[in-house]
Length: 344
Image (cartoon, rainbow, N blue to C red; front, side):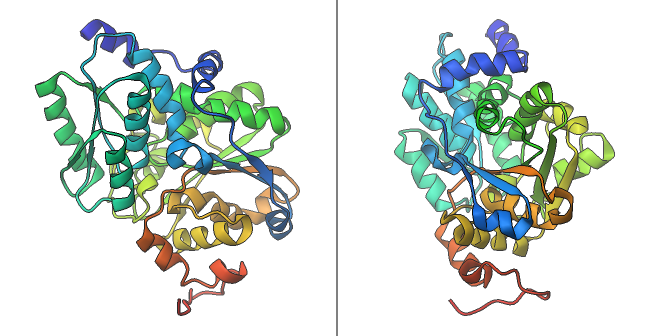
C-alpha cells in the first residue's frame, strides 16, 4: 500500500498534468457555462464573466478533482475510499467513487448542511457524522481508514484533485484568452492552487485573487504570515469552513496570489443575494463570494476583463431564507451601512 500511496500523494502538479487530467474529466463532466453579465459589467465598470461551476454534476467545481483522483485510484486494488468534508468535497468523492465502482465513506461534522448530507447519502456512500468542526471530522477519518484499509482522500493535499480542478481554467482561457483578473473562493485551497498553476503558466500577467470568510480565516492568516496557521472556524459558509491551511495548496498560493480578501458573514449572505439578482442563480455563501469580492475591488478592476468563479450551488434552505431578507436579493443595490434587513 505504501508504494502506491507515495505515488499518488507525491504526484506532480503542473500545467501538463492538468492537460492530461482534462482527458479524464471530459469523460464525465462537460465544460461549464462562462457568461458575460451586462448588469454586473455596468455595476463594476469592467467586463465581468462568471464561470458557472455550480452547474456541474454535484453542484460544485470539486467533481473535476474527484473524477481525476478516482480514475487514478481505480488502478490499485482498493476496498474503497474515505474522506472528511462539509459537503461539496465529500459529495464529489462519493459521486466519483460510484462512477468508477469504488466504495466511499464520507465523514461530516455534526449539524452539517442537511441538504449536502442527503445528497451524499443518495450516492450510496456511507455517511458518518462526527465532531463539531471540519477538523474534528478529520480525526474520525484517520481512525476509520486504518481500521478498514480505505484510501484517505485529503480535501487539499491531493495532487490529482488539484490537477482535475485545473481543467476549468483551461476552459476559461479558451473563451477569454486575455483575462486580466481571476477571483476564486479559498477554503482548503485546491481551486486557488489550480488557478495559479494554469493561469500563471499560460498568462503570467493575470492576477489571481482569493476570497475567504473572516470567521474562518486560516488560509488568509497563513498567506499573510507566509507559514501554515490555524484559526477559529465559525462561518456558516461550508466552502470556507476550515480552521487551518494545508501544505500542498499553501505552497502554491502562498506566493501565487495577487491579493486575498476577507468577507463578513453578512457580506456572504449578501453575496447569495447578488448572485440571484444579477445571474438568476441560487448559490451557497462561498459560491457567491466572488461577486462581493469584485464589488469591494471595484476601483482596482475597472476596465479589466474579470472572471468570477461561482464555485457551488448547494445552499441550505436556512441560508437561502436568511439571504432573501437582504434588499440586494430583490433590487441589486448594496445598502449603506449599517446593513439593514427587510421582512421576507
